[in-house]
Length: 457
Image (cartoon, rainbow, N blue to C red; front, side, top):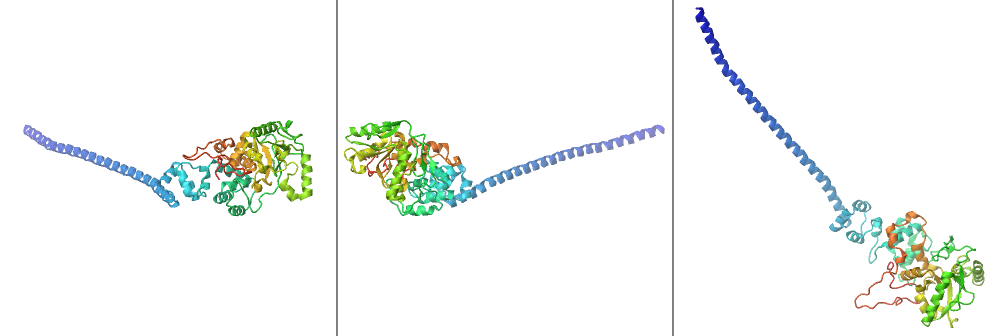
């Protein structure tokens, strides 16, 4: 019995073991399946996460593109509305001018043209907006803007002047008093459209003689002496030198440099069959006072101021000025002689200029004096002649010390407008055209030269 029961228990245990094995196998399979499912879910989750990141990146790129292109498109549209074309807009962006142009609403055909050609000076963009017709800007204009600022003119006044006037009408303003209401001057200029470098007259006066007298820099032959700049009563030229009988009347004196130049000029005339000599040269402060007082006594002060200088304001005190006459024709006005024709058109080769030209009284403050010449040195004399300006205009534009250094243009502009360069460029005549004489269109006594290389008028 016991043995039989023991055997039966063993059989039941084996059966239970046999029944448990399949369950064990099934459990293992389920566990494997769960792991696989988890892997698949994890993989799907990773893919989903990657897709979301890609979308975020794409969305960011698109947003960035829109942030760039939309303002650019708006900017382009605004520039087009101002008047700029595709080529100009490309140049504007290259020069980074879009903000400045749009903020100020600056446009003109001339400005657009200069932007496209890359010839625009970006420091003077507003000036380009008032230029029209056959006018144009160059470095001399930028120098002029600086001079007008130094004279006291505001930016809106300068734009108004440039909008309405020619360069030939701007240079006298450097000599005249500051015009608080510039429109009066503009109107006067428009009433005289015939004005040019050979003749300049106005209906009203814009200069008050002797109003604000200032001491001249007497250390150079380039000094300006007029009804503003003066020499003190003790000034005497360096090395006063007597002129020989070839160049001057007995007792006439000049500074040594001017005396040598006068001798050469007189001898040069003789070699061409032309004879003239100095009748009046250096005159002291006291000598000028006596002369001026006599003018006032005989003609009144107003007339005296037109024909003579007050003491200290006479060029004769410099020892650099002469009054001349034709030899053997002393009774005639020098301007009516053949000697004048040669002397006035060749004086610059010897360092002299006709100081008070014909039809320039409104600028120089003196009536025309065909006999009065001033020594300034050869280079400067040639430059002044080539420019067509009076010495007063030329000096105020190119030589005058700056009242405020902040008004000076850039060094590049100062270099480009160095007066030593004026008249040095030689123009080649067009094919089939003859080379013009330097004085072909200049009337006797005029200071203009048709082949001047300064700013065209």
